[in-house]
Structure formats: structure tokens, C-alpha cells
Amino acid sequence: MNTYSIKEVAQMLGIKENALRFYEKKGLLHPNRQSNGYRQYDFLELSKAQMIVLYRKFHFPIEAIEKLLQENNQSLDLFIKQYEQVTRTIHEMKQIQNSLIQSINTLLLNEDTDTIIKRMKNEAHLFQTSEWVDHWEFDTWADTYDESILKTTTGLPFYEHYDEVLQLCIKELPKEGNVVDVGIGTGNLSKQILETYPDIELVGVEPSLSMCRQCKKKLPQIPLYIGHFLQIPLEDHCMDAIVSTYAFHHCKTDEKLQAIREIKRVLKPNGICILGDLMFENKKSRREYETQCTPRQLRELEDEFFANIDILKSQFLSEGFTFEAKQVDEIMWVIVAKQQKMD
Image (cartoon, rainbow, N blue to C red; front, side):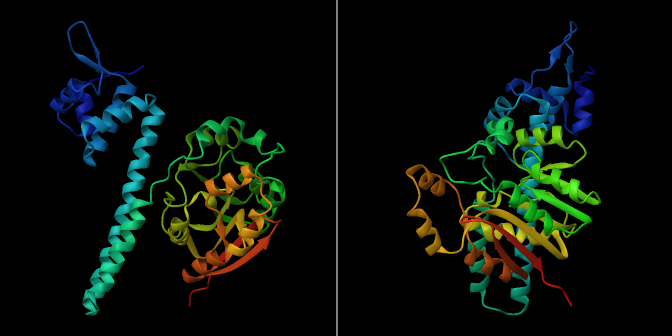
């Protein structure tokens, strides 16, 4: 295994050697010491040093970095943490950039400053809800996910028509072009997409590292990116289609419009978004369904953020999409939203 001197590490990271000595003194780094006292950094220590430098650029206190390092001792985990932080910051900076552009235009047009203040309040709220958290423990579920969806359950019948939902989504896809599967999980949908449309260029986005590992075993040829609906780590207008099954309900109610705007950002003009998920037609239909539920099913309904189609439709329409909802069963729907043709 290659090792690196303190001088080499400092040069690679663009910092002073004294900074590395300081991080070592604080207990963040533990380079090996040779008999002559010289420090030697292996790849893991180099990865830790890179992570420390990144987080210091984002003004993380030493104590917070120490906690992060204690939680992630593997090189891959360290790089994933860095990637997530960079992606999160890029998205936040883009939102700030867009807000500044809109504010400048508002002032140039001599419009009321109340418009700017209102926008600031709205976007502050979006920043507070922009970080995805694994409330559903997908990292621990990944190993048994494929088996569990086939089992009969006394909870909500999420997967009763699983194959039908996947096939309906695939049917709506273009036969070629660039497609991203958001919330790719273990890759079941993507596997069937490639079997049906081998000319599609497919990539996956998934917040759970454990799910990514399982997906790579099944589909080693697919590029995977750590991300989610609120932060899709792809360039603007690069995808012909976005498809997702059993994932959109993880966006909180007040995050769904933000997710739609992120979908719009990633799609090419005239692109299509296809969502297969548990939804309700409106509040009334949800209340009617709840009267049939067991206590366990009611708890599951409360734990998730299932969309009402009437609200979702208005949100997609407000962002320039057409909207079609196809009902699979009492609670499962497939949404097809297309960006309207631009003149």
C-alpha cells in the first residue's frame, strides 16, 4: 500500500504542513510514525485529511468534524460524505444565485420590495427542508429489500401490484435517450427498463449507499450518483426522462413543489417525468380509505408523505407540465407529466 509524507499530503491538498500537524494534535488524524519520527499517511488517512480540509472550507468546527470522522472510518464512506456536502452546497448556491437574479430584476423594474421580502421568506423555508435524512433506514433494509417486497404484509399493500406499476412506468418511457431513475434502490425498475429498451442511456440516483451497493451487484454497468429528489446531482436540462417508483412519497408535503422544480431543472425541453407511487385522488378519498385501515396501516400512512393528486396536478401545471394520472389500484397511481412544448 502506498504511503505519503506530510509534505506530499500538504501539496496534494493545497495546505500547509502545520495544518496537518494541528489536525493530528486535535486527534483528527493518526499518521503512522517511522523509527526516525517522520509521519507516513496511508490512503485512509489521506482521505480523512481531504475530508477535514473540505469541511473546514465550509466552516465546520473541529468538534463537528471529529464526530463525522468517528461515524465514518471507511474510505468510501468518507468520500460519500464529502460528495454529499459538496452537492448540497452547490444546490444551495444555485438557489441563492437564482434568488439574487430575481431580486435584481425586481429592483430594475422598480417593483415593490415586498416581492423580494416574500421570496426571501419562501426560500429560507426551502433551505430548511433541503437535506434528505434516512428516516426509513434504507441502509439497513437494502440487503433484504428484494425479498421483503414479495412478502404478504398486514401493513399498507405497497407492493401488491409491484410488477404492474413498473411495467406501466416503462411503457411511458421513450425507447432511447438519456433517462435517470431517481430512488433507484436495488435496481429492479432499471433492470427491466434496460431489458425492454436496450438503447436507453440510463443512470441512477439514490440516497442510500447500501442500496447503491446492492444495485451495483445487479447492474454494474449503470453509473450511480448519491442524491435524491431535492438534490439530483446532474447538469441542467440533460435528461430526456425522469422515472421513479416508490420514492416520491419520501418528499415531505412542503418539499414536493421543490422536487418538481428540481425535476424540471434536470429535464430537457419537452422531457417527461414518470412517477409510480402510493397516492390519493384528494383529501376526501384519503379519509375514506383511512376508515378501512387497521391501526398499523394508519400508522404507516402517518409516517409517510403520500401526495394528493389534485394538489400534485396543480403543482406540475404551475411549472409548465402537462399532467396525467393513471390509477393502478385503490392506492397506487402512475403519474405522467410532460414539459409543454416551447415555442
